[in-house]
Length: 422
Ligand code: FAD
Image (cartoon, rainbow, N blue to C red; front, top):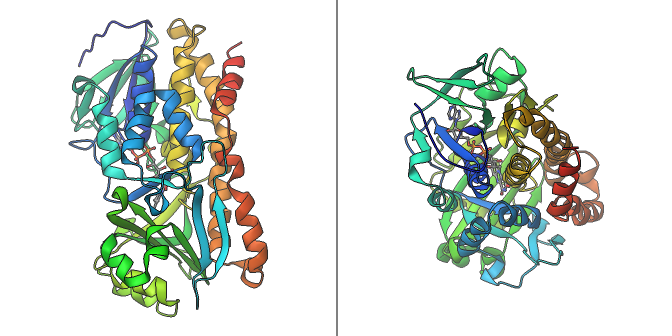
């Protein structure tokens, strides 16, 4: 496949994987005037029918990648009680007995974003609509790549086709092939570990949820904390739908299935939460099907780049979802990488490794801290260890936990990255 595009830079980028990270990066590179192609294994861009929330840092990254992303997001975003002014992220409550408040966590930054959540598939459709159709190639599963004497990279796909580029970006998710090849591992599973938790996910019609638990609990985001689990509910689709995720510790800490998503009719979930309080049980009763997702995360990778190959999003730093921050880190990656490749100091293909080195130096510590603190958050929410006996302390911790993620000034992060270009 040969692709020609006249742009401001004498190099081309191939992105493998068209999830939120890959698409956001493609939009950012085009915004910087860089020629880019996307190779996606699936027959179309696709996301699951579930909610996803973004903090102020992620919304700021959207704007800086391309204002059109934030505009699209704002059209879809749903807030607590569907109120534009609400600063509340999540009401943390007791999952047993009465749903007493443990901490009302607010984003509290100048943007007052509160919980801003969207339906994943609809958000991905919006991102896809921001790139021209001809740069997206489907049914292209990357098998390997090789560096040519010219310095160009040849991408080799499962269907036997090849493509060429100066930069290869692995945006291919938690089981990243690009990561495996870049780090020289035996398998795509190397470096991933089961976090000892699984989650049931599902959507409920909001009018039914309101009937079951009342407007206050149904229309605002809630996280119910309990022994060995926690349950998250929040509105999406401008309040028409409730997104539910019920997390549970696996007693033996092991995941023995090849598959990470198991079909579930809901009985197992109801058994797991049988002794929880009334609001939790009433919500879970409304979920007919509730697929079970094993939660894996990634051990810290020693690098996010080698030569002209680089990782973004879950391929670089797959995390548990406990701080609602994983995809936000993919957006931060997309902003910093597109900005560095678009910088005037990145003039030609020979300057690319310096840009990738700066990206790695800025992005790796922060995104890996999101992974480790997210695991710790999961332990707190399930009242593991000391948390079990001291809910006041849990409340205090929750009020502080997210500040460093949300209060990040993305312009300052970009400035630090630019300084590393020398
Ligand atoms: P993916 O979305 O996994 O995309 C990878 C793409 O690459 C896929 O389209 C795949 O088909 C393609 N691909 C894979 N291999 C190949 C190959 N060899 N060749 C070509 N293409 C390939 N994050 C938040 O910020 N907020 C939240 O509220 C939140 N909630 C979450 C809830 C749960 C239960 C979970 C599990 C995660 C949550 N996350 C959240 C994290 C978020 O979902 C991920 O961080 C994000 O979706 C990762 O995007 P990505 O583009 O890096 O990878």
